[in-house]
Amino acid sequence: MALPTARTAREPVPPKPARLPLGFLTPIVLGTMLNALNSSMLAVALLSIQKAYDAGAAVVWLVSGLYLATAVAQPTMGRLADAFGPRRIFGIGLLLVLGSAAAAPFAPTLGWLIAARVVLGIGTSAAYPAGMSMIRLRADSGPAAGGAPAGGLGAISAASQAAVALGPPLGGVLVQLVDWRAIFWVNVPIALAAMVMALLWLPADDPARRASVTLRELDLPGMALFTGELCGLMLFLLSLPDHPRWWALAVFVVLTAVLIWRELRAHRPFVDLRMIARNRPLAATYVRCMATYVVFYSITYALPQWLQQGRGLSESESGLVMLPVAILGIVTTMWATRLVGRGLRTVLITGSGALCLGSAALALFGSSVPIWQILVIAAVLGLPNGFNSLGNQTLMYRTAPAEQIGTASGLLRTSQYIGANLASALVGIALGRQAGDSGLHLLAAVITGISLVLLLNAATTRHLRGAAARG
Image (cartoon, helix red, strand yellow):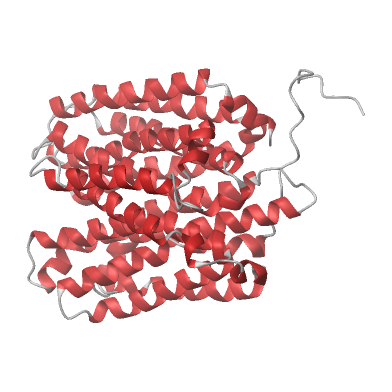
């Protein structure tokens, strides 16, 4: 059989992408949507909840608590999926969602409601790492073993972006038609549907997996240290720039040192530092994902604030202006799915280049800019989302060890949430309490610089070519 002329003799021909049945993929997509949906839907209900419980600033912990729980629980659930079986952990996560979503509306105090949101965050954290583990097992056991299921990964990425986009308008409709309790109840039918389909269509776990796992192999001390370390970091980032919690930073530094010492000596470490150090492509993917989401969330947080305070738009008008960012992100995910076969370098260069263009365009914003120009730039800002999200997700899938794909997937999501909190701090420093043109221009300069580094990295990193060759 003749080799394709477009490839050199040194570059192996990638295997055909693995195709996943719709019945297999649907419950995984529904499960992974829950985390993004609950992250974005709450924004429009905060004021109603604050009034219902006669609460003050503490209501913000409904947001922060979910972020903290998710950032910690994603790799933890991934490790449990690797150890006990992904289908089992997927189902346990959905049960936690059902219980917390059904109970939250009856919380007697704000503290109980925050606790329910934390449990909800833990439950929604199971679907992505467990789903990625099941996809890897299915793809590696099929006739196209070794080929990355670009369509399946693209569907997960597009569904998450759709959930982020639809969260605020869906939450607004639910709050208006019912009340704030409906944003919790809406999880119940979605989780039930995902659970029924998982029982019907997802393959059972290997029973030998559960029998072979011991508490020592789970590395519970490593999990506890990682949880404390990450909580310290997230609490510090969430406190910027108003009242920095320096004690939280100290906790992070100390627990990081202890975690490194512990994990380098563990029999089966929760965070396999030696593997990550040896696997430079995987380590670089985590850093690239974090930097990408610093830019993405900086735009997501800053632009609506500037539209309302600097441009004088209402909340609903600023939400409509942000729609092109969300819609283009979904569309470009489908486009990026087709480009993955040509190599991840193409996908990431396209995404990083568009990110540079959109970030630099923010410097053109001013209080007198016509709305149509803002809409055009908002559309440009939406272009890179699909490319970068799918590119980083696919690169993690291809470079992570098959037996640790759950943990690796969870750590990818953790890097995303760290990027989100870094972005929150950056926006607070640049815009302050009143978002004006000068603050937006300063933020544009910073994130344009980050985007340029991402573009140079995508254009010059050698392992991207190797990853493309592996499928």
